[in-house]
Image 1: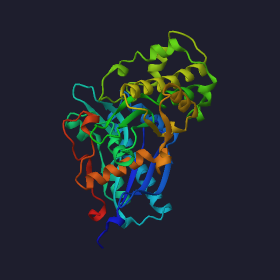
Image 2 (image 1 turned 90 degrees about the vertical axis):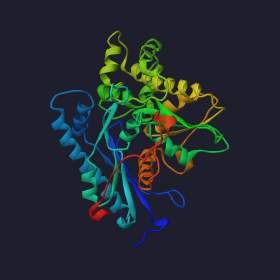
Image 3 (image 1 turned 180 degrees about the horizontal axis):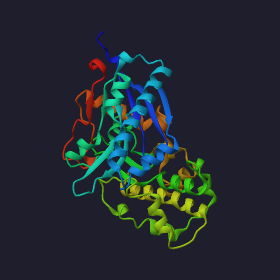
Image 4 (image 1 turned 135 degrees about the vertical axis):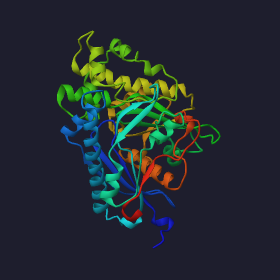
Length: 376
């Protein structure tokens, strides 16, 4: 049966830098956006440890990569199938699954820049029977881009307003901003600003064996250490001009422990200073964009960190701070939805990158297409 505009459902699969879970959404974009169903599949600690071992150079990497690529492909498919079942989604209406995969290396500044995400899309296509679009970042890199961030194109389509300048702040493992000027003739810009939750999560896991700092309560109990913050801000990434992107290669527990070796601080004070590192680096980036009293819209897991939000408001008093739930999409589901949208772009032979954001020479259709069973 021929699919109509209203029939077109896209799934998005996302596993981010925090390595906590696979998120899945089922959405439609035409004639208007609707979030139909969501699902989360937590990653167990053993699997997280294996993935982390691949984010930095080590032994026997090719065998580990091959096994994890297959295993994650199976888990992405499991998450998608559970979403379809629980959401009572008609598989025949699903046009494609957009799968980000799990990033294990992102080297935009290497002599030959590269990025690598695992979670075999062939396995996802076979186990779901649905066409999969994956490997979005490498085509942008092939045309001179950073391969990241890719979500600003979706932010532009979803959140731009002609009434007011806006900034979308994604607080995942890494923080990135998208500037959305009200003036339609002004370029959308976007780039990574530095760590968001990645260091705070690593530190509380190291000290307290908690996955994350709920509401930023532990950070709020500590005291900011300006001298420690100053040393953290000496990381060369913060002085790089945009376009720029980063990841675990730059900001990780080993980097933090190297900085901490010079002095001794209470654990809670270190957490407070890590929160301030995120807030300060974000605030400096937003101020450099010289927007007029922009609305700052938060998404990602860090949108629920009340202490971080309070620090951002203190550092950015002219910004109205809210989150994407005010515009019909919970902060939790923005990135997965972005990759559903990117799959729609690819299936429609439309570009998915913004050259002003990634530094690519030209816009390109992104990703590879892996047909489902019987080509559906």
